[in-house]
Every structure is written in C-alpha cells, then in structure tokens.
Amino acid sequence: MAQALDKEILTVSQLLKTPGLMIPAYQRPYKWTVSNVSQLFQDMGTHQHKTAYRLGTLVFHRDPTDVSTLNIVDGQQRTLTLVMMVWAIIQERWEGLHRQDMADQLNALKAPLKAFMVEQQFESKISQHNLHQNAMEIKRLVRGADFTEQHIDFLLNRCEVVIFTLKDISEAFQFFDSQNARGRDLVPHDLLKAYHLREFSEQEHALKAVTVASWEALQSDELAALFAEYLYRIRRWAMGYSARYFGKQDVVLFKGINIDQVARYPYVEPLRIAHYYVDDYNDQYHRKIDGQFKPFPFHLDQMIINGRRFFEMTAYYQQQVKVVVSAEHGSSNQFLGATLSEQAQQILKVLNNYPAMHRTGDKYIRVMFDCALVFYWDKFGSAELSRAVEKLFIWAYSLRIRQQVVQLATMDNYVLEKNLFRRVKDATLPSEVLNLPLASLNDSENKNNRQNKNVAAKDPLVKLFKGMDYYE
Image (tube, rainbow, N blue to C red):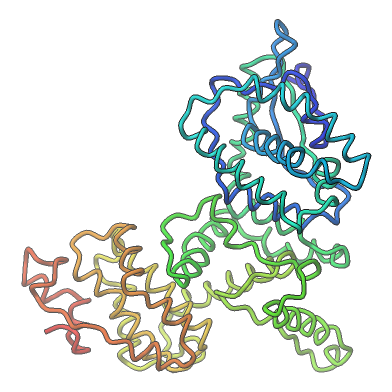
C-alpha cells in the first residue's frame, strides 16, 4: 500500500482548485445539517488567530485508467460544505471586497467550482434536502457583518485538509476502514481530548503534559463510562433533554468557551474571575508555607471552560463519582462527610445486596439513582444528605416497582416526566429538592411482582417503601 499512497496538505483554496474531483455513486447521502454548518463557522471564528487550522482528513482514489478523475472515498461532507461556502462568498461578497488579491483569488476559483458542481448528481432526497438547507444557511452566514474579509482569508488560505490519494480502490477502502477502525480513536471522549488539547492557550503550553496526565492514566472504558453514564446524562437531564446514548454527535455538550478568545460578554465574567483568581491564589508564595490548594469551583451543569479546565474538570468528576460509588458500598455510617440516618444506611445496604440488583432494568434504575445523588452532592454537599438518599431512592425505585420491564427508554422517559434533575438545577436550597411530593404505591400498581403477591411482600424494595410509608 505504501507505494500507492500519496499524502499532502492543501489549503481550502488549493483543494477546490484540484481538477477532476468527483463524488462517486457509491457514496452515502450528504447528511450534514445546519447545526454542522453553524459549528464549522463557529470553529473558524474561534481559531482564526492561528497560522493554520486543520479541518480533517480526505481520502481520494485515482484510477490509473482514468487519471482525469479523483474520486472522494472519504470526506464528501466536508468537501461539499466547503464548496458551498466558497461559492456563497463569491456570490454574496465578491463585488464588495476591499482586497483585490482576495477578489482575484475567488475569481480564479469560479471555473473549478462550476466544473465540480456541474458534474455532481444527487439522487437521494436526503442529500437534496440537506444541500438546499445548508446552502441557504451558508448564504445567511456569509452575508453577516461579523463574517469579515479576515474570515474569508482564513478559510481560503489557513484552513487546511490532509489528503491521502490511493491508486487502488480496494486499498482506498481498506485505508478508509483502518482510519475509522481506529474508530476506537474516534470515540466521543477521544474527540473531546483532541478538541481541548487544541484549545490550550499559548501561555499554558507547558502545562499540557501535567494536565492531561490524569486523563491518560484512565482506561478508555473508564472515561467512556464517566461521560456516557454520568456527565452526559446529568447535563442533558438537567436541561430537560433525552439522554439515552452518548455519541460523537453529542460532544458539543462538552465544548464551551475559550477564556482567552471569547468576547467580554457579561455571562463570561464570573468564569473569567474564577479562572484567574484560582490560578493567582495557587501561585502565591503563601501556598508554599501553608500548603493550601484551591481547586477550581466546578459544577456539573456550568459552562465549560475549554482547554486546561476541561481536563481538570474530567479528573475532578472522575474522582467525585468514584467517591460516591465507593461510599455507597461502604459499611460505615459516615457518608460523603455526613452521618447517615439508620433509614438511609438501610437503603444503601439493600441496594447493594437485593437479589434482582443485577437485572438490566435494575441497573438502569441504579444509574438513575446514582446520577441524582452525584448531582445533589455536587450542588449541596453533605447538607441534608440522609433525607436526600431517602427521597432519591423513592423517586428512582418507584419506577422499578411500577414497571415489569425497565428499558433504557423507560428510564429516560421517566426522568423527563418527573424531572428531579431539573429541580436540583433550579433549587437554591436543599429543601426545594427534598420537599418534592412523591405518590405512595400499592399492590395494584406493583407490576414488578404482579404475578405473585407473596413475592411482593418479601421484596426488599417493597419492604423499604412500606417502612417509609410509601406503600399501602
């Protein structure tokens, strides 16, 4: 394969002038949506201070029997979007440009862009719809006063793609598959790692290795579980949105602001103050004397600060979740800085030992309970923690008793219908969460044990509900 592989780095302008570009018939539909386009424009605005910005990798196949055609094996989504962006700039901005060199550069792109667009055929209704919607959105964006000539220059001359060109079609697909099969390379948390490494400021470059060390110390499945089971679900549920699967399309949830680049909007100032104050406090010579260290005041539902703080946040919550889960399985009455009531202790003991705890549905309920407890502790610490354990138990396990079968969708729908996470998010006092009214249950509602009332009477969960006067 090495002899058939050519690699080069091209600017967007050079890419679009490449002759013979073609989207072959075997390509899947164009699926980028308006949100993808908006994100691309946002990324350009964020990174335009850089001398170069990589937009990704494209894989081409050039058939030796038809050297005039360069088939796009991987990268049609980006290529088509870039074509539409530059064509919209030519249509909407070319005549009013102040820079003659830029006008000349765009003029030179007219012919190759026309040639490319004439050659492509899109029979898929999905492609037709998305291309039309994205073209309209791109027109609106390039017309905007905040899309300047500096943005145009950045797009054409400093945005780059890495091109791999292969001469054998089977090798081209094999290369494409191997790139994505490192699909393990492309799991969501690794995409976040790559993004936030780019977001480090120049002044913090020396801190990269130390900051990312805790991330590198974790196994990939540990990071996957942290994001998918806890951070993603808590943040989504707190916003009132579904949180079933954490995929690559959801990584935007963990992209926030770059303190060094974002404008001085009022909402940014508390984060900016905390960011610089914490660093200044920890750097003072007094810390060498008193040994005190102040961590950044993270909260699960706050705006994320890109770069270093993201990695610190991940390490912080990996430890917090570990502390909560370990404490739940401990035998002491001391729990997360509080002395638990006998009732709360009994709840945790039952949850760690009842016979059906390993069923799939019961695992979903436990995740729901754990996420709620982590979120409560993150906001209110050890305040009223015994009552919180009791309330969260009744809230979560009411679903287990009511349902014969609990699936992922069952859990997700229940949270959205009885959204305790939103209540925690909006609360200013623990009592606003702990005074949540919850209905008691009875045998007719008990679908979990509906086939045998004797089994229901012996169910450890039902016994807890009865002991707390939530089962009649």
